[in-house]
Image 1 (cartoon, helix red, strand yellow):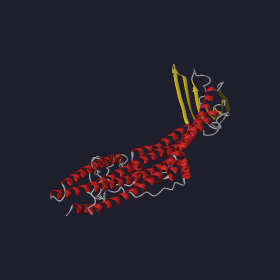
Image 2 (cartoon, rainbow, N blue to C red):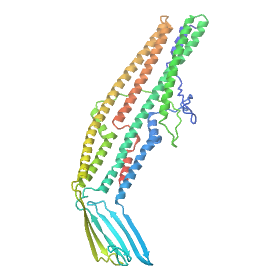
Image 3 (tube, rainbow, N blue to C red):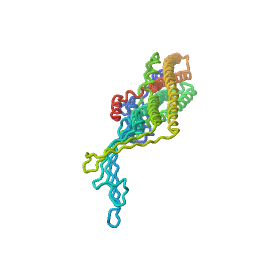
Length: 497
């Protein structure tokens, strides 16, 4: 059998068509070890959807992100503490020469209400006995019972400190949801890019491995022919050189695939919080479907309503507006009125007296309070400018992502055409070699060109898929299939209640 016939046989083995060898460790082994996979059962195919769902369900970053809901609930609970009843009690007792010199008991409840004018319900019982007691504290042996109401008639109608704190706390669940969405979307984008980098490296590795196996089989046959004297010895040297070159290319591809696998593995965790073992095969890469970029305005509008960064800024603006209302309310004179009904008997309902009073707390120039108003106005203006810049950034992100999608898909089509032409050239060179018009050197070059074209086609398809993930992130929709928005809104409403 001549070398040309052997080459003809080997040429029918397509470059890259070899058994998959993900080079991944079995469960329980070192995650950096490399073990081959004999079948798809040993190495199940890992898809992008699998990666995203697993990242959101098990990764520490996603779990830490979900703690924002608990923080928001804690802030609301703290703010509601400004409207809970408080008990104020005290007792003083002192004797001299066996007699009561001081015997004072005070006990009362103050209950601020979440209403305009900042009303506070007050209930108070006091008893003051003793020979040296202050006359203003002295009571009969049964003591005095007082209950009444205090309020601020000139201020507190729009808001006060406690109501402003509660209003800001009620924004916390929505802010937590927006912050979670921003971190979640960025996490999904990073995981998606790591996944496609791994797929690209694995597909490239398969092409290099197939090319090397073809060279190794060819070298074996050419060496036998050279030893038998049927062909010049230089042909065996050339075959050995080709094998060595392709072996170096394979080692480089294997190292890249290993690095990308390790990077992707950092996103995958088990349910118990331990790092998951990584032993998967990459999915097949089909030609990505073309993207409709005619709805660019719709994509921009969707991004302006969905991007979490804009939602965070909007909630920050609402929080600043609450602070502005509070600062404006504090410009009013602080007048506090109080009225209490007093009972001097054992029955609190036996009212025999009424106590009234007022208190005024007013600075002369309101400098501090006017500065608070100015600061909130400046903060609002600053937020408006930042929002305009953020909206411009979001629009640019969407337009850039759409342009990248269009360009990458065109590149993929060109790379596909280039691969087809490279395959035609290889077949034509193979026919010339069979007819005695070509050389083994030129045929090897055609095979190298075909492998390069296939790698370029893989890179182009991966570029399109990564551009699609970037577009989903730019429009704020990358996490939609994995988040139950209705359930989340229901949970946020329950927290606000």
